[in-house]
Length: 620
Image 1 (cartoon, rainbow, N blue to C red):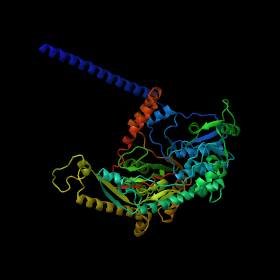
Image 2: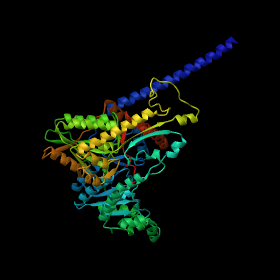
Image 3: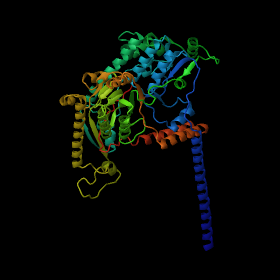
Image 4: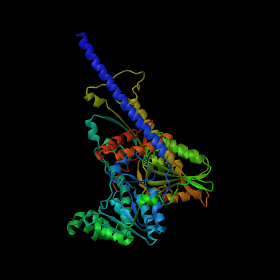
């Protein structure tokens, strides 16, 4: 019996050794593969050169994905999926300034015969960005070259930009979607009650509606009133521009949207015919007809296709704006503050309190920089991080160098907190700003846990020893302290606006209260100084500096050694994924799994107090 047990033991021991050997071999192979990628990445890495091209024809202005002020660090998984599926399947990003540079260069480039708008993959974009691109296209047309738009189907935002074209064509099976703009959100009050989550809500500002989804099952009357106050002028801007560019009757867009059923019935149910008869498009062309038309306008290449220059290829051949380092002859630094405001160091796409403060400090200490323009595109976020940034701005101002704010599609709540002390604030007529108010929301789960038969109990040395233990109810004294702290922070916010904008404190109280304003309205009440573009703000910063001649340069955070390595290594990883036989569905699943991980640290204010506005969640 003893021998039998020993034999069995030996069998398991050898099996363990075999499994351990396999495990070690696998780990060693993975380690060697990692080293291979590392060395090949380091060996093959070299700065990209700028290739030249002699291509000619239509500049295909492909506005793919979100239009951004600053590109995020590329995600190797998303890149791999795009390559696997043909590059255009998943959202990407297109740099706003690149679009403007390409249009400006194309106007004087003899190789460019026309501009063809490709808007089929257009993602998130601000109305102000569409207006600015439209103005650039209008300027391009003065060169005598045409701007042509041709799509199978026009989303509303795509059609708005297409309206600036000389000619608009639509597929005979297509349609033009004009439906107005709205602000619609999901409300979770009943769900939260069913889950027995106890949300402790603190907010200041009757119109501060960011927390309504967890407080209510529907939009409040105040929020409805407030949302319509900025939605209405934005829609009027869009319709006015379309009517002007298309030379339509004043009520044409209203008739098209409000009477779509009867209008469509008159057109026999044909959406393309309705668009043509309504004057929204100039003609209907199927794919083959369109190809022949474009070949006639731009010439034909050896493959029998119309001559074309892709946007990404064109960008490699032209000079880009604001990329040269500042020099001693007079330079304006441009700092992009895009995304949610969060505490600490943050990657591109979010505003880190420490990250942005570091860039402002860099501009302060650089003797070659005479002024800075802070391009703010943010709905706010952490009140603490916003104040860290503002404090750095105050230090910068001690140098006597001007600082000018250029607001993008939105600069609200925390975005306004960091703007208030600037020497000048510029916005577009359709910028959304204001939302001067703050909030905090702390969920506790004692009731949810009790449903599962789980309870929290214990002792502490003070009445608030449990602090923010989410398994226990928030103590009354802590609630009171939180309310007092919130009121103090709101008073601080009001004081910042009053002092920074030289507005009477009582007047600030009246225009604050969480209210949101479009750019024109903000100008009328003194929250902004002037209406204009980033270029206008740069020119103003130069004038404030006394510079007759100047250059402008982006000030950006350099990549760390770790980020440089990941950038090089991710390129090899992408190549491996693309060349493998991994199904696209698997890559997509991996990307979706990674998405929440990237956003998990969103709410990181040390005091849990936020100057944040969710008005960007409206449909265009």
